[in-house]
Length: 154
Image (cartoon, helix red, strand yellow):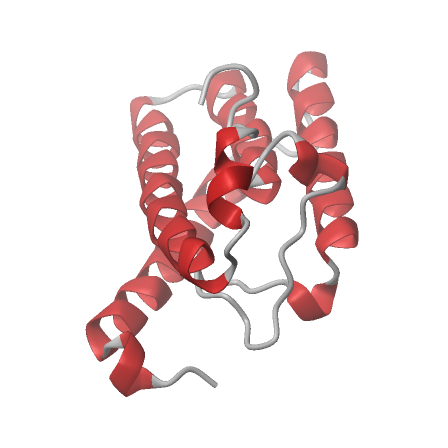
């Protein structure tokens, strides 16, 4: 478990609030989508996002994976598989899945949910990268050779 005095309770609460918002917004976008009547291009992106997400989880291994932005005790830095190119391929997989769902069955509130989810993930990435830099000495160098979320962009 996390040392709440060292980490700070406010950071722990923030991390869990971000996780809650992330899953709530994903749920809203998925549950309001016509899942059995998706456009072909949306289905392609959804399948690509699911494939990237599963490949990322397989690469990082369940025991090394954490739902919050904190580094697991005894966690290991992973820089192979999709992590060779992207530092946060699971977040990329989420966005690759939900943005087509929002665009393929457009409404302004679904657009707002997709934008909010993107913002939540961006904040989560910032927190996570701070923890990773403190936990793993080679992480700073790794950040110079990889993209954060979107290949060739960011």
